[in-house]
Amino acid sequence: MNIHEYQGKAILKEFGAPVSAGFPALSVAEAVEAARKLPGPLYVVKSQIHAGGRGKGKFKELGPDAKGGVRLAKSVEEVEAFAKEMLGNTLVTVQTGPAGKQVNRLYIEDGSDIEKEFYLSALVDRETSRIAFVVSTEGGMDIEAVAHDTPEKIKTFSVDPATGIMPHHGRTVAQALGLTGDLAKQAEKVLAQIYNAFVAKDMAMLEINPLIVTTQGQIKCLDAKVNFDSTALYRHPDVVALRDETEEDPKEIEASKYDLAYIALDGTIGCMVNGAGLAMATLDIIQLYGESPANFLDVGGGASEEKVTAAFKIITA
Ligand code: ADP
Ligand code: MG
Image (cartoon, rainbow, N blue to C red; front, side, top):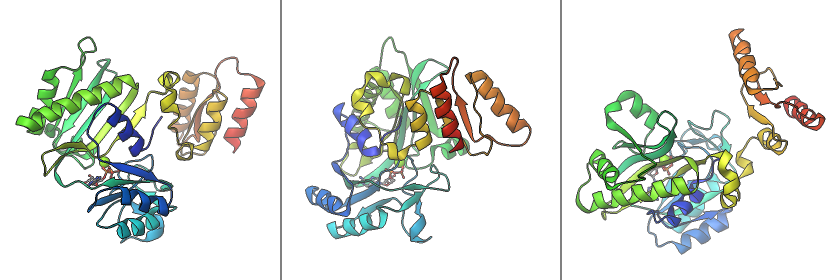
């Protein structure tokens, strides 16, 4: 399950991690009110959708010259103008697919003076059965491109669950980012806070891109992309409460009500299969013969009449 940036930052804050002040807004009036509560003189108007690459994204309705889904504003009036442009429009980013996503929420955040942008993420590494960190000096950009073009600029390491996060992990990060003195200490602290949040909330991925150093010498988490392990959600009603169903495929939401394992795909052939293995094999066969499946659907063994009815309705919709 994914959440919005501002919700992810609220969780990070709970664990002591440094994030900027900010307020979510559902309307232009709320955006203005949010900006008035911030110190200024720099504000950031950030589209809240469950996809990254917002800064470099384009609004479908605004033409090719329009600015992206994250904009720096120098006054409350500018915040108002940007909010008007973004709300209700469709933002297309490298992660949304060509259809894009409608922006229904904004996050109005205090602007930072950025000296450097880094990349830091934590994820569950199935190979080592540990939580792994990925760190890079190349922040604020597409990490997949960095991994492809300059893999030497990416450092990864994992944490032994028996010891948890240790000071040497912090030093590894500081070294990878070329930080010394007080900044190295701050980085060490942030790493521990991120690890603690990750474990406590059963996250599957937490990506801070960028993690910044401000011109005032502060480390800050400037973006937060969080994905939770859905099999652990029953332990976290507070996390479930953050769910924004408007960001999810309505067919997948309907399927989850009937406990069906359903994933929407781009193709044209609908599949209803009992058993995940058979379902996967069916998708493979369809691909093998040059077509593509419209969905993955495992109704499970011993599916009831009610479940199968729901499944047919979802597929034919
Ligand atoms: P996305 O990754 O979806 O494009 P980010 O939150 O990373 O969105 O924002 C894109 C860029 O905008 C950042 O790399 C940073 O340069 C800038 N930015 C974001 N938030 C702030 C902020 N509070 N102050 C100053 N610049 C910001
Ligand atoms: Mg980002």
